Image (tube, rainbow, N blue to C red; front, side, top):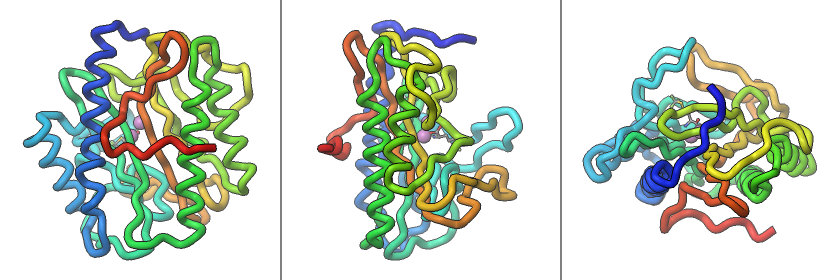
Length: 264
Ligand code: MF3
Ligand code: CO
Ligand code: CO
């Protein structure tokens, strides 16, 4: 399968799904305080999606080739967890940072977005990593326009992260999205300018850099999903779903509570 261009009707449905995914984060963000468990965050999000929005949580029972079905409705990745953290009974404590990754299906279309949340007050280093990762995502987004290359996105993200002494996780990437959760193309968060796929209007994909405070190496836990940093350093991630427009980009996963783009 090659990269499909979305029609005007597809795009309108992607806008709805994207906004709904972002609204789950708006809803749950204020409830992420010391003492809550990631299982409770999952339950809050699940019930909001199913009972309030009428959306389907895409992660629940998602089982790509080689993976067991994902057992929960969202991913919660705390501190040194890079991505795909499975919600569980562990209580969050002040100083933790957690990525909440939401993917909803509405009217057959997916919206996929994640944000970092501070539990109480983060350390200076944790705050720096989260902010820098947010800047990396946005530097990638700002590259998006017809005629730009996927390699341009990866290059700008990698350059910004490494200039600050951080590293880019290589094993996981952004992805095309639409009627399917993960479709072509793969959107690497590292690379060389002017390489890879040339962008065209109607493409929809995610940009979701995972940036480590230490080395880039990762390890997969025995649960088959949870990915952690090999050196146990902190890791952060932000994600938006993006549309390539006639003259640039549109962020599809925006809501009232979406953080403002960085001013850099
Ligand atoms: N939402 C993740 C992404 O951004 C994928 C999670 S797969 C799951 O691509 F099964 F763990 F939910
Ligand atoms: Co994604
Ligand atoms: Co996601």
